[in-house]
Length: 221
Image (cartoon, rainbow, N blue to C red):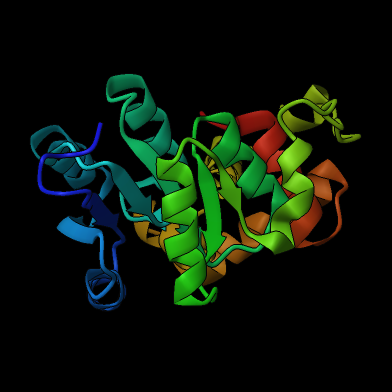
């Protein structure tokens, strides 16, 4: 339901980089009909502000300290179903977009998209639709299409050490090597070594296949 202040769309921006939040606030705040009512730099702060501000739409990054846009979307859709979620991510990856959609995100737009595309996505979502970047168009049928299972078996997953399973789970949540390293108090080089070991044990090649496996086994965890 729109607020009483004309037809303004209230937006909460969630990103753990202040510069990104500043840029989004300036870009969106200059658009007639849009109003940025708050900013959050973490999942917990985003939940608190959503409770207090009840924005029409939460614009969230996928990868954040202390959580992920996937986990945030899941929580917001469960607790505040009237609040729409639009994911704004640097990850041009259909698996991440499909996962975001599966937990209730109404849209997924890339960070390098033109500002007008973000505005178009917001208006489309508030009209009751969904919006996924054209480059991710193949995600549109993901909800109804059969899930293509990878060749990785659960027995292979069980070969992973607890640390490797943690890292695979963080990859499913969209975290980068640097963010995983900070979260688990490891060096980036150590995370990279673990990823190489994971790929060897799971017999997968390349980043895309590794993410596919991560999302398949740990999506929404």
